[in-house]
Amino acid sequence: MTFVDHLEALRWHVVRSLLAILVFAIFAFVKIEWIFQHIILAPTHSSFPSYRVLCWLGQKIHVASLCMKDVEISFQSNELSTQFMMSFSSAFVFGFIAASPYVFWEVWRFIKPALSPYELKQSRGVIFWVSALFFFGVAFGYYILAPYTVNFFASYQLSPQFHNIFKIDDYLDNIISLTIGTGLVFQLPVMVYFFSKVGILTPGFMRNVRKYAVLIILVVAAVITPPDMFSMIIVAIPLVLLYEISIRISGIVEKDRKKKEIEFFNS
Image (cartoon, rainbow, N blue to C red; front, top):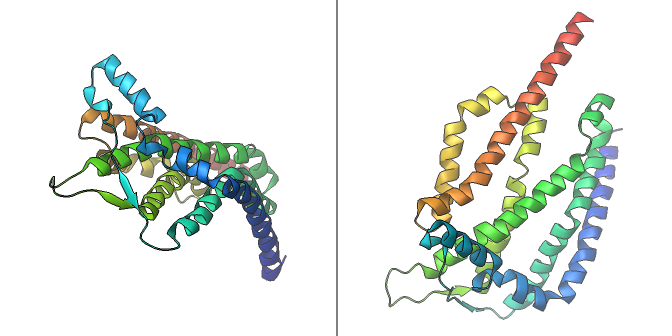
């Protein structure tokens, strides 16, 4: 295929992906008020599942800081079209999350012809793992990072004279960034797999920079959690485990690549 043919093929993959997102976005738009009340604004309510589970865990292990106080938070909409435009952006995000397995499948269909039979065999089940990691990352961002972030910034005050009244679109942008961003971050094992296949990443390099990676993870966890060690560890553990899994994946890929090189030179 020529370069133009590849662009044409890519265009139709993109069009089909956008249509799938649009279908789910329409369903979300119809229920947008329910979505805002029960999903988007849920981390601002004390009945949010994460608060209850963490409080129960804190009572069991006698760590009182895990029982967060009720979030007293007020919002304002200071532009005429803010709420209307938020309906569209929120519906699109929900459409993307719901249609993500199909979007990943379309991306895979575009990449697939460039792979050898052996690489196709090694990549079996890739759509399942990419989708599972994305959904797990979105859930982690929504149920762990979002409530911690909302609770921290809503209760942070430099003076009793200051009142936190947040712009609703700023709140929405933060929720979207935390959920979608974490979903993409959880693609780390997949990215490591492909970078290791082409020799850009090696397990040795990842082990050498492990302490820096762990330090960055701990700093991020410390910023978004209450000021105690246990809360920070709860957030940091899944990210550290993800990094360790990626090192293991890189090691498997490097071992397999070296084996193929030996077979090539012996043939």
